[in-house]
Length: 147
Image (cartoon, rainbow, N blue to C red):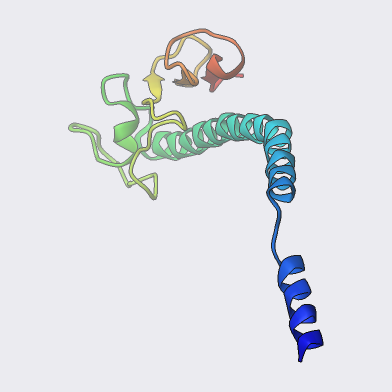
């Protein structure tokens, strides 16, 4: 009986986690987060740029269909909303040309639409990036339909 009590005590003693073991585990997790975290955040920012480019491509495709139906692109005043709702005075509109309502860019800023554009015969569509302001570098760089 005494022997069983001693064996049981040893098992209970070994079953616990010491404070030092817990600190080692927490330190390892913190180091991992410090090394991997910024890389993952950067990938998320890159994904936003890719998403903005894809959305602009979808707008361009819808604008091409709009032009085929109506004979021209929406004016700057009509904007991208003309892809979802028929503008007044526009004949042969067979939309909506987008399956979903217009969305903001991945940074929650509205896309800028301009027609006639400054870069050829196509409309200009711009996302101003993370800062929502023209120009910028890296994450604040503009995503442009003509580039």
